[in-house]
Amino acid sequence: MSIVGYTNAGKSTLFNGLTTAGVYAADQLFATLDPTLRRLDLPEVGPVILADTVGFISPLPHRLVEAFKATLEETRNADLLLHVVDAASEDRAEHALQVREVLREIGAENVPQLEVYNKIDLLETAPRIDRDDAGRPVRAWVSARDGSGLEALLGAIGELVGDDMVARELVLAPEQGRFRAALYRLGAVRDEHYGSDGAAHVSVRLPRADWERLVASEGAP
Ligand SMILES: Nc1nc2c(ncn2[C@@H]2O[C@H](COP(=O)(O)OP(=O)(O)OP(=O)(O)O)[C@@H](O)[C@H]2O)c(=O)[nH]1
Ligand SMILES: [Mg+2]
Image 1 (cartoon, protein in one colour):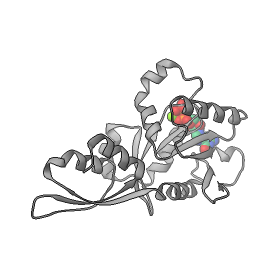
Image 2: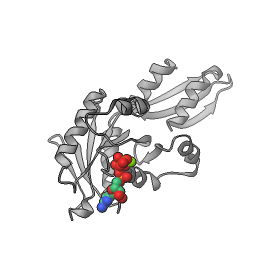
Image 3: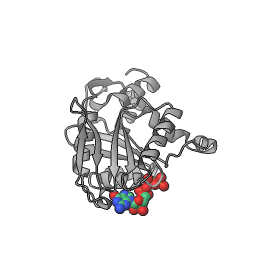
Image 4: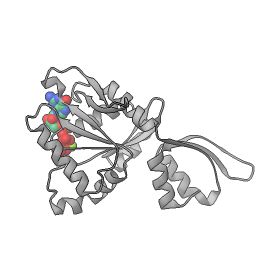
């Protein structure tokens, strides 16, 4: 899951706001390896990886495209994008359009999105979740700075991500250590024990997009 949005929209503030509550000590190593990635523990869903990204402006300067290939890759492969908009900016509609344009440029236009209208403390608007006709969350109104609306946002994320989770019971031979390590890195391991044959019996649960990407890069277990 990636946080995207126009420069200064409050992406990093939201990244910190969403993760500080849920980060546990074991994640320190993870945070040190890449400060733009953190694990978020969603009630009902389990752990998901959250990525902070650079501010999007359109057209995207080509040197930026080069410098942030990894981030863009992350965004294209995400199972959900949180599109943060500075709701207090008078240019918010224009900025949101530019971000959508960049998402198209990098081939991420089909990734499911939840809009996060941030900085409602400046508007004196109450936090709320807007839904489409089918009842799916489409927009959350929050203040990343004072934390209002973040609980509801986490709930909405859980609804969207939880709809598309994969649960598997895997039997991994010792030589499948890479696959097992990747599952741990994704925070997908629910339970594990070793059989008398030395194989690891691993119970996993993770977003379908993460599972498919793992199988594509490492092969089916
Ligand atoms: N009033 C108010 N200010 C906010 C809120 N969230 C972020 N800010 C402020 O907006 C500015 C930008 O916040 P960042 O979180 O750095 O924004 P960003 O989207 O990560 O910016 P870039 O990474 O530079 O694109 C900072 O001064 C924040 O303190 C909010 O909910 N309310
Ligand atoms: Mg930032």
